Length: 236
Length: 278
Image (tube, rainbow over all chains, first blue to last red; front, side, top):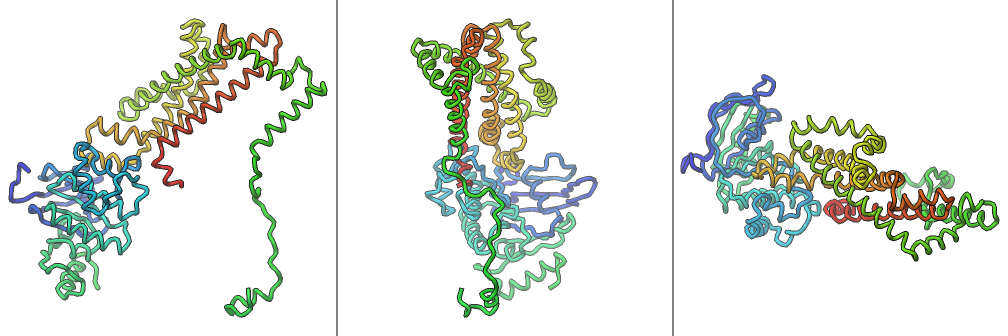
């Protein structure tokens, strides 16, 4: 975190990304403070995954311009758990950092999977696999955690449990988080700030000040939600 | 089914009894079915030999083959020839595997490597390795090196093809993962590429092992002075069909055994996949 000590963890200025001359990101500005949890909402094709991939440094052959500053320790959680099926759970967690086996065990304990270190990923349920993926990203002690619809493939009950787990983990590790999601409620429950991307531009931003635990029954919750749905072009 | 169940079902109880449909599939498997064919052949062979229906000069009787095998083992000819053959096959196989894997890695991990290597290997694949024998004999003579190179050429192609295919079909999502966790090139090869290509490699290995024995048979019948193939070739000149059959049985056993070994390795090495199947 050499560049942005104390002020911002992520700084994006006038970011443009083009596929075949079509601007998927069309001048995005975004700052994320250390430890801040930002949720990024948007319709399919709004460019939210493109923005996340740009921050993750995964857009190698994509045409574009703009400034981008991210910390050196960035972890990514994908929609699929993306565990190597031929490596045991613990080996997946410490992939690339074999010296961190002890920390890897602690990480697995944190996500409630102590004792499953030697299991194969295929032996775990979808929710458990995603928890391993969370352990794998947190064992690297990231300053920035990028999550691309990490709970999108999970059933509703598992998703609620994962929300609680993610909140707990973020409180403990304090990374800045950018969570890409299409679930408005998920965004409001988890984030400090929700931004809405449409056609490659940020069209709305809401700072969420609702007290924890946040509940959809809260009138304030409903107000934020209807403003965000408006910004997404959904009228209810 | 009682008539007091659901109203919708009542009609069914009053209709005609269910007609048993004709079974179209092959039905239940027969116990020890795999053994029936070979045993039947053996019975015909024995009966034919005992009644004199099969000429001993055309095909020796099963018991002659067994006693001949006993004699060959007693005077040590079978063992020494078998050892020579096995050595050739194993050396050829070992070099072929290394060559195949190295070429597959170069061609699978770099576009330049693929551009340079893949074409020639595909061309080589189209030429049966045994068709190269005349050239190999001219270049290498009729000694051991020619034999081993011939086996190697038969072995490396399936290893290359299947390992390369395994490499190329590794899910690109894993490549992305490797980038995000910051794996070095070598760690990427070790943690992602090699294990990911292992199923393909092992499939190639099964073909390679079969191919190694095939090449062995051919090269051992060209001017050899040792090996199972030489033993059989010599028996041909004296019309000893019993020895020829002993040789065939040995080849068959070697083929089956080596395939079983590779499958065992497959099961062990791919135990992470077995959890899916079971």
